[in-house]
Image (cartoon, rainbow, N blue to C red; front, side, top):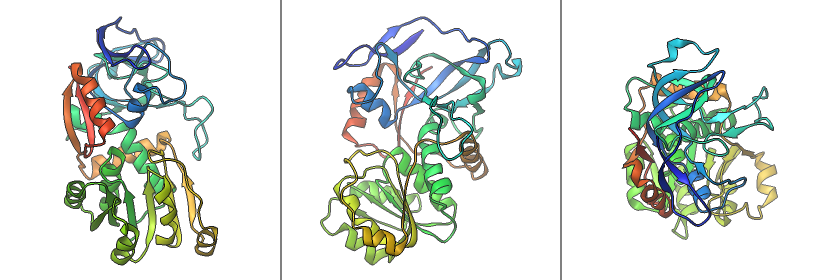
Length: 332
């Protein structure tokens, strides 16, 4: 089968012919129709991720058709259109993942290939209102955004929500989910065009985080926020607690702009603001996220679809952060 392979450090992704996997007990083989990129794939591709091994087939997100099942798996899965939960071995604690938790695409071979094998427990039926390309955009980013907003952030109708970096894959999902839940949503982005596109998704107002007075602008617009979702962190994170309403929740994942800076503790404890880290989500989070997408017929924001052979071009685009929404590979 054809696959996109990370062959070594400081080397471009290679499209190669590799052995087609065989499903073992409890596993299925999925013919991948489309796969989506995540920031994780970019960091792995440039050697800035823990536990990198070579060669590796990248890709956490995928949608396709089950073609074969291993021992102990219901034959009824064969022929079904599915998406894959890339978070494996979460464990029994809903508050945090287990020590055995892993994400599809490293260490196990991922979805940037014509076929992928996964445990049957990680399969979910593809939302029927979506194309394979749209469905492939869901798993990692939508799961992360859903848990951040609702499981951790406790967002509910009427809350004022700030999405920092609304043009990313997680950012666009967070906007869609928050708007659907009846929240008043505000956003930041480094691009005026992305802010305008976020407004079309239901954002009430947005500001450029490149502006010197971005925090003052947000304070003037919103007054204060009940929930803040941030995947960037960095030095400007220090301005966020002052934007929060009493009892607010600041939920963060990733650190594309750097570490958390020194914060003013009096603002945090006097307002009883919570700082909450999150990562991916539990199986219950995944099911609830997918139920929301199906119930409200939500359509993921796909910025561009690339051929599998152009995976390196897609990675390069992600490195420039020029996309709005998800980057997707059409596999077969």
